Amino acid sequence: MEDQLLCCEVDSIRRAYMDVNLLNDRVLHTMLKAEEHYLPSPNYLKCVQKEIVPKMRKIVATWMLEVCEEQKCEEEVFPLAMNYLDRFLSVEATRKTRLQLLGATCMFLASKMKETVPLTAEKLCIYTDNSVQPGELLQMELLVLNKLKWDLASVTPHDFIEHFLSKLKIYPSTKQTLRKHAQTFVALCATDVNFIASPPSMVAAGSVVAAVQGLYLKSQDASLSSQNLTNFLSQVIRSDPDCLRSCQEQIESLLESSLIVGAGAQQRRREQARGRGHINHLK
Image 1 (cartoon, rainbow, N blue to C red):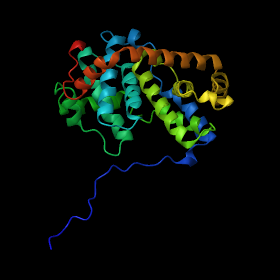
Image 2 (image 1 turned 180 degrees about the horizontal axis):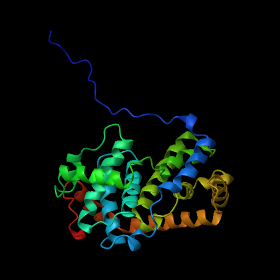
Image 3 (image 1 turned 45 degrees about the vertical axis):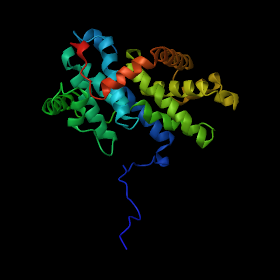
Image 4 (image 1 turned 135 degrees about the horizontal axis):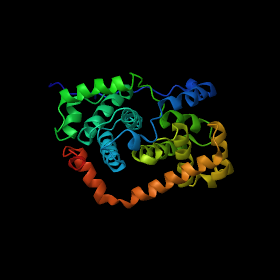
């Protein structure tokens, strides 16, 4: 009798579960104190950069987001990479021809911080259509680390989302959907120059409120109404409710404008991310 294959082990990436013991007010207050330390300069595009303009940042950010989506990176990787990019550009004048190299390097570092199996230098270079070589990326990595003073433990909006969700009285299945929507809003905010100076806690809270409103959860519980939820989360992050409400409105406006782009433009960006990724119009 011939041997038969009875089972097949499939290699899967092991990921750590969220430690619920960390979802307490002490940890939350520590993050609120630390987040300002990792904020980039809000005016670096005017005061530091001479060649790079907001449109160029948007192009590179969109490319980075598509690469992260294509590679199925952890949700935290893209916002963390954008934090590194903005912090670097806050202190180092950079030529526009090196902006994509910087974006690839920031994804390289962020994936090392958040992924079980990080993105490789070779793979990231392929996404630039080989306009960047692995040696260049590794050299840029050292420069970025030097300019960031090796402080890569940035606080991002994702660090706050779980804390906020743990305080809401919603079903686990609803919480999962709400989390996904909030994470999508966070990614959108990371691509937009208007949110550069916004504290991560504010972006996270605004994203959660916008997600609740978008899913019409307010009709299920009065505490989830826009006003009640905004007042509650503003107390949690120790912020003015009007500021949080303004942030939420900005996020909703950003979502509307991104939807107008259309499926055709989105498909072109995905093709760019899959290998035809050299951003020529940054030259």
